[in-house]
Length: 91
Image (cartoon, rainbow, N blue to C red; front, top):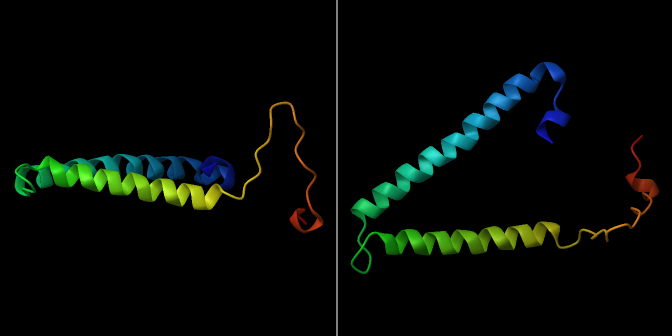
């Protein structure tokens, strides 16, 4: 989608920035998680806090996904999409 909405001359930069942000989140998450496991002791080990945080984040992510997509229409296999409403037609 990102490559479709940016002009052709910006696609290389967009692709590079998306890759840096994707890899950067893994870097930050791994470093932070490792530090928490090593230094924070909750109920005897460092894994309890990271597992609780993972559970909370998965629930929050699922709730946000549901809230965003709950009103979308599901297209059954073989069905034609509904025609656009006049307000939805691009000028």
